[in-house]
Length: 282
Image (cartoon, rainbow, N blue to C red; front, side, top):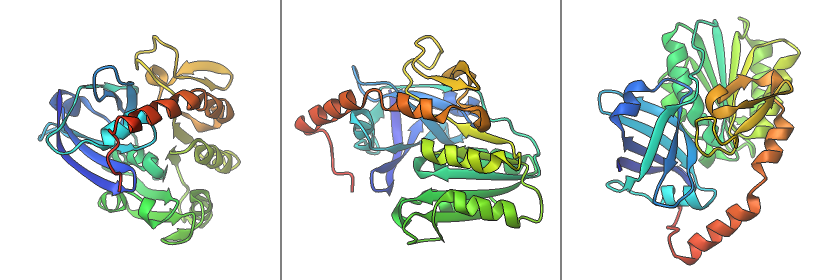
């Protein structure tokens, strides 16, 4: 069992959980993820490690309530426990001095870029973060990123805060206005957003890395559930990724696979609601 030391809301339906896990904390590097099972017989889901405290022996998870399993996780409070937390898994982010590194996070994808920002800054980069949400209430981790990055640009779809528009609009401005060439772009978030980021950076030839979020079961490459197409070659996000050259990713195929079990996910959530296990998410 993995004790929850802290639990709070970052936004509506987005939960911040600090989990006691000294072994994972000691081995974590930017880009790593864990696979979590909240209770016996529940689904196993991958979650990014948004932060790790080696001294305190904790890892931080950012969870968005979507289906039954994430609903269970978001209902947890300080003092509760998670049954299984397995990791760290996946390949870590390539960290070196690129010069100017721009990180683009959308929604809970912002949790992915937080440890990347820390590591890239420590490697001597100038680090800029572009973070997006539907409205001000959905822009997360701005304060945490501001403590690390040289610049943070919040964006909102409805124009209620920061840049009025999509993250790609701000990215285009940053690429065009920057006095120094952007050395790398790293992106994490909705598939459509990552696809748009890749399209924007392809013509100027800016190296772009996307953190993919396919359906995943075991996290060891055995089940094949997380397969993704990278320049026509099948790869597994859990062991070959989760980060890939965004210019080579088949985002349409990834999006189709993410929709494969929508009916089952809906039925599972409805069953959980009937059991009365979905606490208020406000």
